[in-house]
Length: 208
Image (cartoon, rainbow, N blue to C red):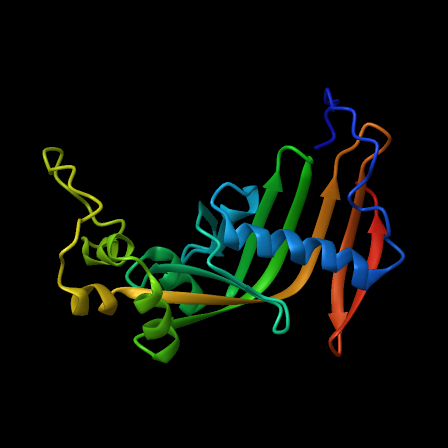
């Protein structure tokens, strides 16, 4: 992020009130809410990092399925058989990277994850998905070895055995512990950390 960039002229900084923690986080929260609501929003597709069994970080892109501003939680769905689900059962620490290339605005989240599998939360969110999305969970085990001539038949198309699909479905609810915000700007980059104590936000500007 320190390389010299050909930045577009943008007169208004997104991070313009770093003395006001509530206002700073409210802007980020609005971006998270927008990311849940639209596949065209850049925050709809965060990269999520887990800690693998070998101790190495493992990152992949997921779909942002929910943001609860009161609980300060972000949500994505996964296959319960996937490596990331296994990672999070072993170690609930989970990182998010979200980036808006138009505003040159990056958000990194440190979170603690809870995997909901075969419970009421999973049932509610599974039933709310369209049939073609539910069907994707009826496929083979993620990451399993395949022969070179295996057919390219993923994702499965409905109708499928929905009981089997639900058995593979998991909701990952991630409680936000800390946020790192970075905005690149022609008049000077801005970076800040946000954290909470007894539910109250704090903000500290830091070097970019």
